[in-house]
Length: 496
Image 1 (tube, rainbow, N blue to C red):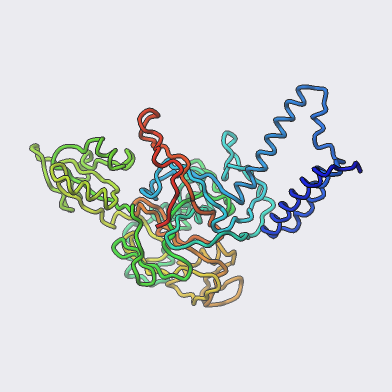
Image 2 (cartoon, rainbow, N blue to C red):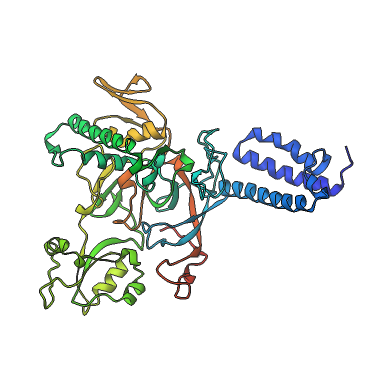
């Protein structure tokens, strides 16, 4: 072995200590097999790692220098993306106005502790599909069990959290942004009479109806790949990333009363920029674009209801009955508004005639879709959020709430037989949860598909916490017309 210099020994010692500290942090002891290779790179140099540098062929040197740089960058990005932070873009308005469509975020993996990947062999910066090639960005083998290394803390009430979409385990590729299970129930219902009197049925009969809907809808999706696309299954860390606010912690009992979230019977603090949908009628003129811009209402969120006469009867029933000289309703807009935006419009009596909050009857089907509850998005629950180590008694009323936790998230086989409930072949009427769960909702309460529609977020789905907006682009404006929101650059994401 050639004699190493003091400088080489120092470099080797520093790199080795840092690498061993990383292994201790992630509790991954098999990683020590890499230490001999580190020793060879700095000390023994038996393996010709940089053979291409001595090549007489200039093309080989140029190509290999690029390959070397790209491989190093990909490895570095892979580990940074897994364990330190991840870039994320806000795709929808569900958290407005706390976070805006077009915000680019750094998401800290350290805040709650980074997860060891379920699918370690994956391409950095691609969640589940490789661009251009339109194929999987990961190899399904090996699959590692859930493990989270120590971080700076745990999810707290009102934290904004990035997580993998829990209902994204099964996906119809032509409907990738849609909950497969909600899609199946909706398609199944369309195949049967729409006026089933659920109040007249027992719980078992109601459950049989819902099972029929889901089975029929699932079969319809699977048998029509031309319409729905191929149905695929994704591991936890390859599911779509969502960002919402945590409004319920493990062990809490959550209820929503007239839009107000209550935890254990007490109203929680609402986000400052929380939004609800309203119908806004003017005195006659249209609301000018400048006012929409000043209020911060995007073009996608501006819906002029009076363009479609089919809405007229419903608008009049809500009291929006002001008419112009021709006898038609004056303009009525459907808009998401914060309290400050509401006050600004309501105070403009020369332009605004009346503002009515959107009724809850406009909601879609709520979680769980196989339990008859009459809940809606503004009046929901009460519902208990599972906590690790807690044991519950299973009943016909609560089994639909927790069956996905038992089966899909915690990997058990659940069966409902004539004589009772069986878990992993054993008859039982209790279950002890193996993970903590959270309840996530968007601040844009009427425009957010969140836990009210697809249920609990398991702890193994939690990705991290947004810490800073490093770029924000307004898609409604041009590059020379305020497209870059300069006031949001490097804005710290604060919890309420």
